[in-house]
Length: 168
Image 1 (cartoon, one colour):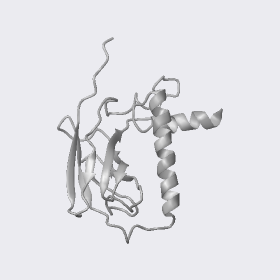
Image 2: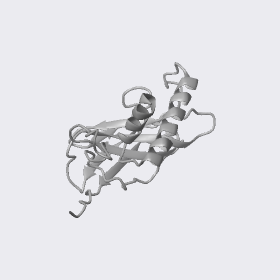
Image 3: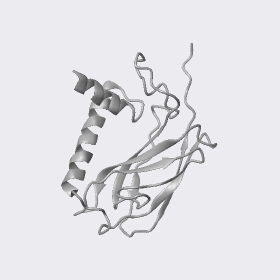
C-alpha cells in the first residue's frame, strides 16, 4: 500500500499528472533506472555527448522560482545507452544539461522535454498536490529536442505560458 502511494507522489511531482499519466511516468522512470544500471559505472567520458544549454522564461519574463528541465530519451543513436538528462535553473532561467557529470550535455537522439517550477510544499489533501504548486501549466508540452550526432552545441529556449486560472 505505501509503495503505491510513494510511486504515485513521485510521478505526480514531475508535472501536473493524472493517475494514468502517473503510471506511464513511473514506467519511464523504471526504464531510465534500468538503462542506467545496464550502463553501469560508465562515466560518459567515452560517449559523444553534445553540449545543451538554454533559458526558461515564464510568459516572456523571469522564472517565479527555481526549477528544472528534464530530457527523457525517446530514441537514441544506435549503440548508445538511453540516458536521461536534467538542467536545473534559478530565477534567471539559465540551464546547462547534465547526463553523467555537471554540464556534460546529452547523447545524440530525440528527447521529450519537461519543465517543473514549484512554489511551496504540496498539500497532501489536494486531488493534485503537486499541480497546485507547479507554475507550469499541466497542458504545456515543449517540442521534442533532437540532438544531432554531429556534436554541435545546442542552445534552446523555452517560454512557459501563463497558467490558466479556473473560474470560481
